[in-house]
Length: 377
Image (cartoon, rainbow, N blue to C red; front, top):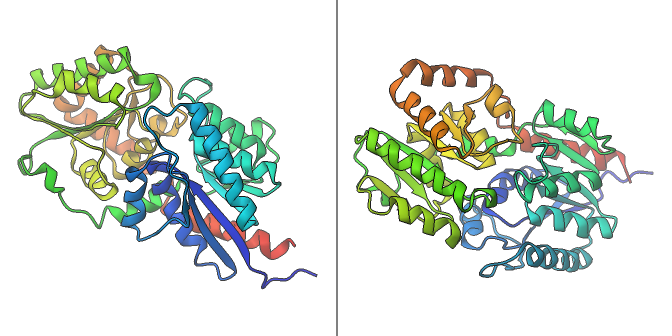
């Protein structure tokens, strides 16, 4: 006979700032379920960048593996998370492990759970670019994770269709994306960051982020060349560029932009400051996955600095324009946004039916797991 009162231990695993932002609402929703004991395992794939969103939402990791070190390799991250997560699972013996997205933490923690026959839930399952090397290594991480999970929480119908086409045996639930849950809260709880004191009130600015491995080297040089030309063509424009911690990214950005008086170079922004900056920007340029969803929700034009995206909805029904890392394509589309009001308005109108969720994805995930454990011993 099933025991509906039995307590279930669920471990939520994440290691990077984007994962934390998207998993915090899930943790909070799960903790509202009476019979769930929810723990957070942080791998520390990012260090202070991971701490920021946890502090903002007033959460603390039950254990942080603190794996990050200078010039860490993918081999090192994978083996460290696999070993550390495995030891933690052996200690706490969870009924389920939840992971998120496409990071190396996601893949390695899922594998550790699989080795122990622990049930796995994948938040943001089913996204596909169709190219195993774009994004790298994230596409591979996501594909391998989806092969071994029990619950696939797909953010969109097309993500579900990808899983079905691959013959997934997981229980698939379309939930929307949890990043929208976090965004809708944060957008009402932000103010202008102090580091932007020199940014005049009302001044138009573009927010730029570029950090993915496939953008390093010549692609990033092309991006920065387009940015400098845009500034030359529009001297009234300001630019905010939070720089990834990796020296391979910082050196190139500084070389091109450091001496520009209307460019604000800064460390990665904490979550509420980033939300304010997105919301206040005239438009954005980014190679981030989550930003494609967030800008669609707040109706901001976005130039996607990638050749392919695993979020085609951002282009079809959202604010995204896929420009890759081609200097001329980036510049052409940026100038259109700056100079053609009807072009920018058409982008915003596409977002009327944005498909990334209504802010209730985390509650749907919690409800799905609650129903499962209520009906399964």
